[in-house]
Length: 251
Image (cartoon, rainbow, N blue to C red; front, side, top):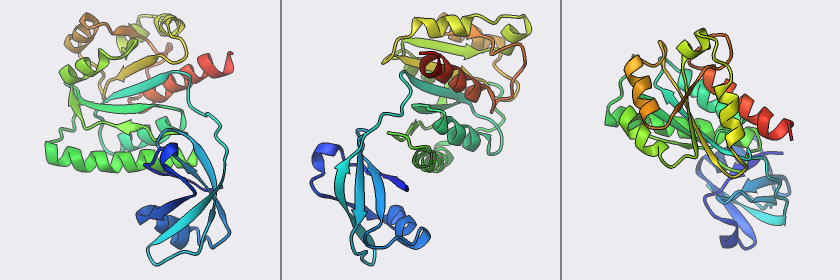
C-alpha cells in the first residue's frame, strides 16, 4: 500500500489529510488512484493513519482517516551518518540505501580529501535533492520518519554537532589494515535503546592523519569495519547493517 508523509503531527489531524503538490501528483497522476482507494499517511511524529481517498480535485485530494495503525519500524538507537563529500552521485546512493537501513540523519561534510567542494548556493540545491531522495526512500521502506539531511558542514562544525551524541565512531582504514576489529562492536555494547550514535566515514582516499587526530581529541572512537577496505559508499551501509543486526536481530 502506498505511503506518504505529512508535516502535521497526529494531534492536529481530525478526520482527513489533504494531499497537494508532489504527493497529489503521485497519487492521482502516477498511481492513478481514485475515490475509495486506500493509502497510509505517516505524521511528523511517526504515527500511521490508514486513509481512504475522497473525490480528487484539480490540485488536491482529501484522504479520510479510517483508523490509526502505527507500528514502529525505526532502529532502537538514532544513528547519524556523517559522510565526507564523495564524487558524483555516491551520496545520493548513500542517502537512499541508508534511509532503507534505518539512518536517522545524514551529515555531509567537507573533508580534506573531498574532491567536491560546494559553495552555499550549490549546497542548498544539493540538500533539497538529497532530502527528496530520503523522503522517497522512507516511503518505499515503510519508515516512521524521514531522515534529516544537513547542509554540508566543515569538519570543525561536525565536531560541534557530534557533542550531542552518546557515542561517536570514525571509520579509519589504517585501523582495518592493522587488524583492529573490536572497537566498533565494543562501542555498540556501550549503547542502549533510545541513545544516539554518530558514524563518520571519509571520502575517497579516507581521512587524513590530522583529521583522525582531531576527531580522536574530540571523543571519536577510531575503528576498522572488518578486515577489508570499504569504498566510501559502502562503509556507511556496513555500519547501519551492523547496528541493525546488533539491536534488532540479536535481541
